[in-house]
Image (cartoon, rainbow, N blue to C red; front, side, top):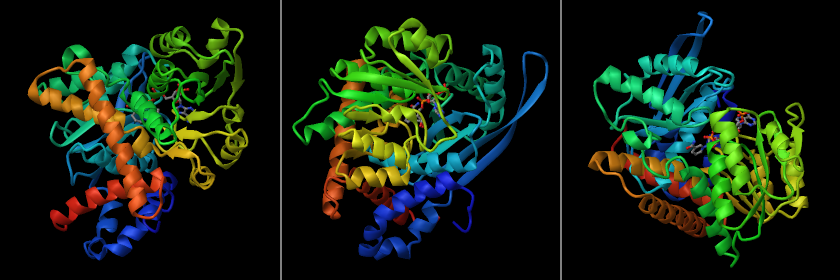
Amino acid sequence: VVRDPNENEFLQAVSDVMSSVRPVLDQTPEYRHHGVVERLVEPERIITFRVPWMDDMGQVKVNRGFRVEMNSAIGPYKGGLRFHPSVNQSILKFLAFEHVFKNALTTLPLGGGAGGTDFEPKGKSDAEIMRFCQSFMAELFRHIGASTDVPEGDIGVGAREIGYLFGMYRKLNNQFSGVLTGKGLGWGGSLIRPEAAGFGCVYFAAQMLATRNDTLKGKTCLVSGAGNVAQATCRKLIEMGAKILTLSDSSGHIFDEQGIDAQKLDFVKRLKNIRRGRISEYVDEYPDAVYTPATPDQDENPLWRHRAQCIFPCATQNEIGKQDAYHLINNNVKLVCEGASMPCTTEAQEIFIDKGLLYAPSKAANAGGVAVSGLELTQNSIRLSWLGEEVDSRLKIIMKSIHDTCLSAAETYGHPRNYLVGANISGFVKVADAMIDQGVI
Ligand code: NDP
């Protein structure tokens, strides 16, 4: 707090982990003796750089680029690149910090990092996106590598951006390597990678329900977002027989009482991924649905006022606050499974846990994305492409392992069924032990 007084998102992520691991620190003095916490909260390296580019009118624009290399004790830094005007050092430090523990939970040898820029991709032409990505990579390429730091997508960075970034990296390095994940299938990508975070999130939810002899079949669900994670979450929920009532973007949300089926989801994919339109256009195509604009000036989001049994926030951080949590509880919600990174405020988390809901924190529930990124790297190393079924079955195994690890750590440390405590403690112990083994560096 003293060092980073204004980094609210980062401080929130740190306090979330530290409040869970305090009993572990008390029981294991070695962690304090080796300064593990002090070292964990200080990034190994932060790179900031200028990203100059030219728009279609010939005007020079300048954005700020970042890469936060948080911790490499168990593997190369791994984490997303976010392109969004809200991006700043605090947001990227929170994402990188989350990745350290999330990546540890995947069972794969991956360290934690995150990067991005305050560039706004919305409303830009393809040519502008390409020039921006090339300029961004013209600096980033010096700092990343298949065994050093391996970025992937996040908000505003999907298949198109990864393509432009990878092309520039390959040209600058004269080398074809697995330096980015989320690559196209014809040039080193893995089947299921685009769907992995959303699929994994639904697999995790199914595991949680199974502990109560329940399934997703017939469950009503609220999903926020309409991007990569939200789309894949919806696809898997539909396959599992759930009924999805909402989707959103930063302008507002749609409510479709009939349910968003596979055909409607295809429309959303074309709308968002090809036409790059707004979710409000859903009601032009399906007039029975209702569109409600966002209310960013209020401390509640009307999306979370709808009645449903399962909640999948898949847009962005802190999108469920205290008021939203009370609305959901009053509507008898049973399960909250986080597809987005840290979408619930600390107060909302506490309310869900106090009320005994099945609550899965993002570092466990959305770890499928980075897990399949790890599998993409494995395929690149052995120069093979696995079938989709193979990747999907490995993803299922990893999500089950994360689920069981969280439950067992929660039980061991006296918080039975608390997935938040379980995820934080198991991720922490793995990384902390590796840091002690490797000395004070
Ligand atoms: P996308 O850019 O594909 O989609 C993001 C969605 O969230 C869009 O619908 C966007 O709306 C909406 N959104 C973004 N910012 C805000 C905001 N401030 N308020 C309201 N809505 C907003 O991103 P992803 O689906 O990839 O990422 C979504 C979340 O999932 C993030 O938290 C990310 O960290 C997390 N995640 C992503 C993984 C991945 O592999 N991509 C893996 C694991 C987690 P609009 O179009 O209006 O901006």
